[in-house]
Amino acid sequence: MNGVLYGKTVLITGGTRGLGKSISTLLAKEGASVLVTSRNAEPTLWKTPVKSGEIQDLHLDVTNEEEVKQVFEHLASVQGRLDILINNAGVGIFKSIEETTLTEWNEVIQTNLTGVFLCSREAFKTMKKQNGGRIINISSVAGYLPIPENGAYGSSKFGVRGLSAILNEEGKPYNIRVSIVSPGAIQTDMSKDRTSFCSEDMLQPEDVAETVLDISKRPLHVRIDEVKILPPKGIL
Image (tube, rainbow, N blue to C red; front, top):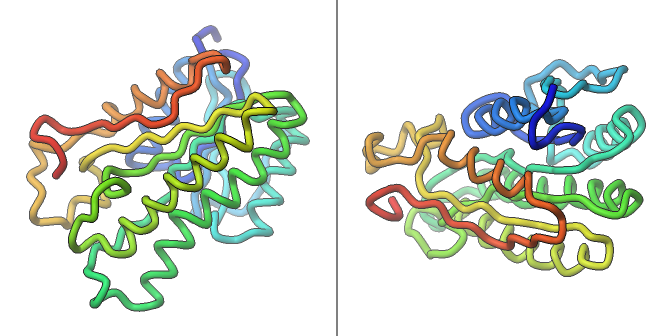
């Protein structure tokens, strides 16, 4: 199978539905060997390399350090390389700081920020050995603006921006590029319960997936730091 990503191995966290599914489908169509993670997938590991254009589901809780280490070590062993990591796994609890419980805060921060840290850290180990790779962190415009009722979620996305900037600097000597894609409201499960959003005004998952593909196919001498994607009426 040919395509602009033929021969590339891609790992997408939270890739079995919504935005993650759109990204995985599009990248596989372009020839990538795609592995997608979900906390709900069966806890089994694949034994043969994923072929070009194929998608392999696997279990991973990005907040579990040992699970993350195991998956990335197994990936390096079976696939032989990791060209692109897309940190997409995320949860949204939309409350004011005053109304947010510590349990809710920890759930959001551990998934949206600590998960990015753990997966990026392990990806670095493989990418350094192969002298290059690309990490794309799916963030949000909530990481740029102090939006009310986004206490934990907004804080996690501000954190992803800072972490990504540091990763970019630490990755420069090893030809590792780190990008942030920050969309406005997307019509996915995360936004369906937010009554202030009109579905007709939202981005579609495919809109964001196309941007991720555009970054993914760039040669590593091209560094793309941050991309914002907004719906027609701006930030929702």
